[in-house]
Length: 97
Image (cartoon, rainbow, N blue to C red; front, side, top):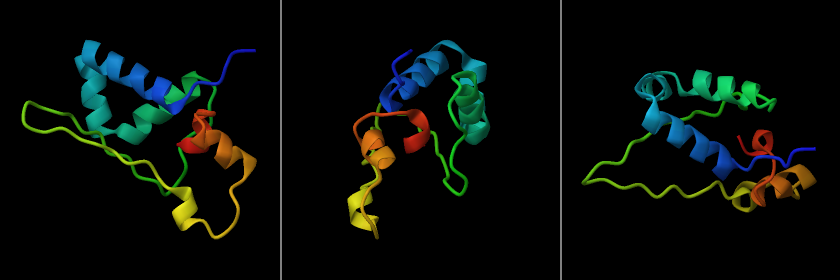
């Protein structure tokens, strides 16, 4: 059985492809949800959660970005599930997308 892909691995693959393929990069900017769902389906992962928006940003010479991850403990009204804990530890894509 193949090791589940982490979010970081998934994102790295998207970045590498966008750097090599200008049309893919343009689609990421214009239809990120569609492109991400296509890539997830290709990997056999569940689609993105409904109601969650996605934004693609590109750094340039004058702008860099630091993205802070969701802090589920801050917003949790209940204990984290095993699936949530796996996602925080770099588990399967579907649990963190």
